[in-house]
Image (cartoon, rainbow, N blue to C red; front, side, top):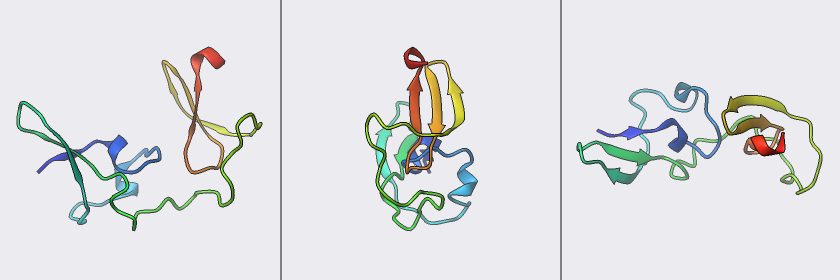
Length: 97
């Protein structure tokens, strides 16, 4: 047995792993590390194409320098993550606020 950290499940931000996977569900994993205590660190990113984001906006990716409306989804000491409808949330670094 090993652990897949929430940040290693899929390439987008996940609030609750149960929204993506369920106990007993077979998944493919990549072994990232075997820690000194024998614990395995695993990643699922990019290995399970059947897991797809359902609320991804179709169309082109945002353009650099474009202005977009978004929703702050998480605040961290280094900045805020904003969802503005594309495949990944964006980070506004604290120095840019």
